[in-house]
Every structure is written in structure tokens, then in C-alpha cells.
Image (tube, rainbow, N blue to C red; front, side, top):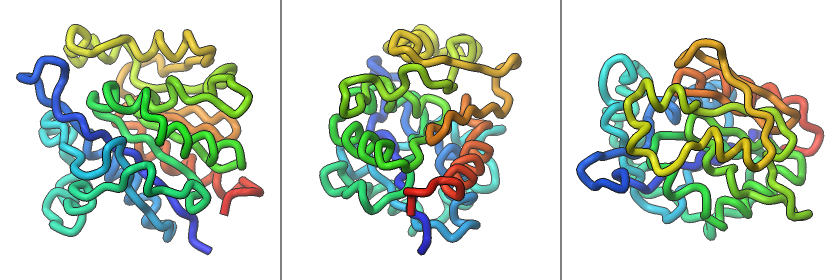
Length: 234
């Protein structure tokens, strides 16, 4: 039976200042989608509110706008998937073996407090499925608690977009909070590469995380490996 992946994407189109657009960082979706597709996985897209997931303009420019992103953008059927995403209340977590949180700065606003995404994540994680994120996607894990009331990330090794990378990307004065510091406050054992913007992933049992956009492909590959080793997923 084919493995089933649920991709989580943002609905947020701009920072607090409406003149600064943001959204889904497209290659973080397309790189992972390609990896999962190669393995014959079934894939579905969910967002906090359902419907349209806007694209981060910066992700559509060189060097971020690569072959997979361009192919997706040029395919009306693929773009339709981002125009008609499911709502969390339309998702039965039992239908999925893993959830993969994509990034883009939009997720900093609509991922952390979405109870529907938290429910799906908790249920997948607690039955041994894989929870994964790339870049800012870990904002979707900030406030997710397990059935015992503890934070899912507490005591676990993980990574995500760093504050240094926010500064280098020149958006540190626009973001609503320091995600790296927030996840540490929740007890995560945060790890990061020595150099910014290089592919870097961390696997802690069934939690798989990638640091930045360049880590999406590696993160997805580690999810594939984790699923192959999971006795309960599938």
C-alpha cells in the first residue's frame, strides 16, 4: 500500500506590513513532492484555512526558482492544488503516514496556533507516523502538544530556519518573532549547520526537520527512510 503524505502550506500573503508580500516558499514543496512522487507516495495539501496558498515572490527568483519550481508554476493542474487546499477539519489523520510542514514566512503567522493542524500532527506522531518540517515549517510545531500536555518538540533534537539566516535574508525586522528562540523555550534541542543556507537535517526518531529551503530534498529523503523503518505507519 502506498504511503500517504500530508503537506501543510500557508494561507498568509504578507507580513504584518501589507506592503511586504510573503507566502509559500515554492521549492520547499516541489523538492519534497518530487522525492515522494518518485517513491509512489500519495500526496495531499492542507492549509490552516483551506483554499488558496499564495506564493512567496522571493521564491520565484534566481537562484531559488529552480527546475521543479518552474515546472510546478507552469502546470495548471499543480497550481490548482495550491488554489484549492483542504482545511484541517476535512482531514482524517488516520489517512496519512506523515505530515510535512513547508515554510515561507507566511507560516509564522498562521501555523503556530492552528488547532486543526495541531490535532493532525499530534495524532500522526502518537501512533508512530512521521512529523516533519523544513525551514519555517517548524513554526507549525511550536505550540503542538501531545496528549499528556507536553510540547511535541520538548527534549527532541530538531532544526529549522535560524535567526542568523533571518538576519542574512534581511527580514529580521519584519518577522513577528524569533522562531529559533521560541522553539528553544519549548524545550527543543535546537541544532544548526555551521554555515547558513546549506542543506542540514536532523532526525530524532519519527521527527524529521530541515534547516532551510536548500534542505527540502534531503528532509524528504529522510522522511522516506523514517517511514520505511516505522512499524506503525502505513
